[in-house]
Image (cartoon, rainbow, N blue to C red; front, side, top):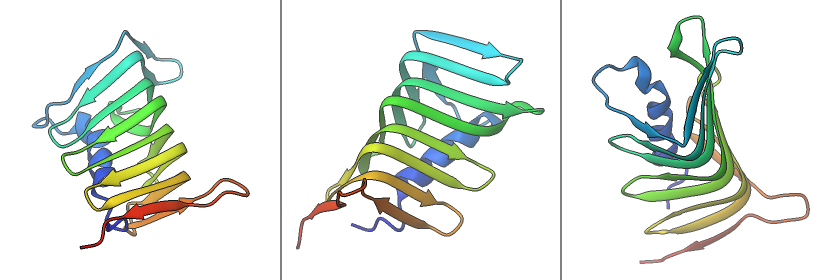
Length: 152
């Protein structure tokens, strides 16, 4: 399983830039949606489902913080509560996912599991550096990163 070229996370990052891309349809549904102009946040709460042509995201809550350019100027994206990211090839789950376009880092934390046809990895945290294409799995204190891989 090639986690250094972690396609799921790269696709997730593309999703976050989607508001700026007019040709990409992204469907978002939630129980409630609030724009908080004072804090420049778009907040989706309750059974949040984000459908993008190449990735689907589920979470209890999603908060997109934006800059002066409005919702096409995303500064950070945070999904919390039973987070699941899924493509045709792999699935990643955790308690929280945070992406910051400025530093090109995606952090998936809390009971992280990443799986595809070649195997799975469990950890407390996964940090994907999209600028360097390096993915790092980290265990909780006193714990270990574990994996199961299928050999051919």
